[in-house]
Structures are given as C-alpha cells and as structure tokens.
Length: 172
Image (cartoon, rainbow, N blue to C red; front, side):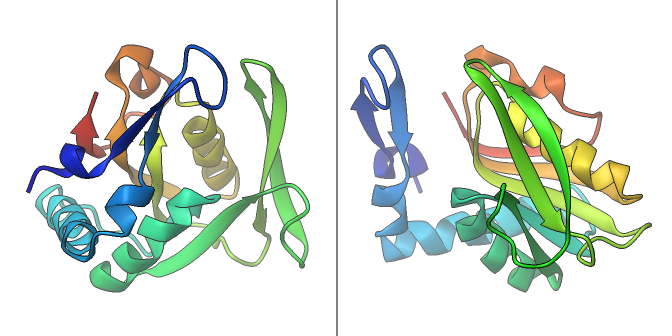
C-alpha cells in the first residue's frame, strides 16, 4: 500500500514556508490505518524490538502507540505536555527553535529496567523524541527503539537520537 498517497500536504502551515504532512487523511482511511498498524508491528518484530511499554508522545503519537502496544503485547504510557497529567510527574524541559517546552510522565509509569519503545507520528529535527528518550533513560529505563510513521530526512532528526533501532514507515 502506498501510504504517502494517504497523507495530505498542507503548504504554509503552521507558518509560511512550512509544508505540513497531515495524517488525518490516513487516519480516516480504514484500510490505510489498519495497514499502518500492521506494518509497524511487523517492522518491530523484524527488528527484534521487545518492549515492556510503548511510550507515545502527545498527541498524535498516542494514536499509533496505543494499537501498537496492543499488537505487541506491551503496555502504553503517555508522555504529555506540562500540566496535562493528574498525578505526580517526572518532567524534562527541552529546546525548540523558538523557545522551550516541557514533557511529563507519571512518576509511577516508568519502572527502572523496563524496556521502552518511543513512538510518534513524525520525526523532524528530533527534539521532542530526544527529550522523551532522556526522560525515559533518566528514570532508569532501557530505550530499545523509536518508531515513526513519517521521517523528514532533510532535517536529520536521527542524528540527535541515541543509537537504538529507528523505524520509519515513510520518508520525505
């Protein structure tokens, strides 16, 4: 299946000069969504990625991490923006091109020694994925890989990530 054909390009969003890769058109296609989760699962199995937990990054990472966790027999852990989680949290601040941001995870979600696969819809510069990896590793967990639906290769986000398997289904 040609997943690229199910992704809509939106020029000048969220600001002029940006070409936004919109996955909502992929999500609404039942066969495309099913294929995406199935091929994602297959690639994780082929890469021998065994995770106790799939960590999904807010918010589009949740969409793919949850069914992937189900298919792989793993638990799902959300990593959210500041102030969205109700219990005590671990947090990490990280740099963006236009400022800083903060990610949080419940303190009781990550157990030292747990194997973690981090999933998001897209990797661009790698800032959010790198911060999530640090958050996981700072809590004694073993990072076993990353998974992305889309990778924007020209932005070289991979070079900012730890040396673990990286799966991307579509490259631009």
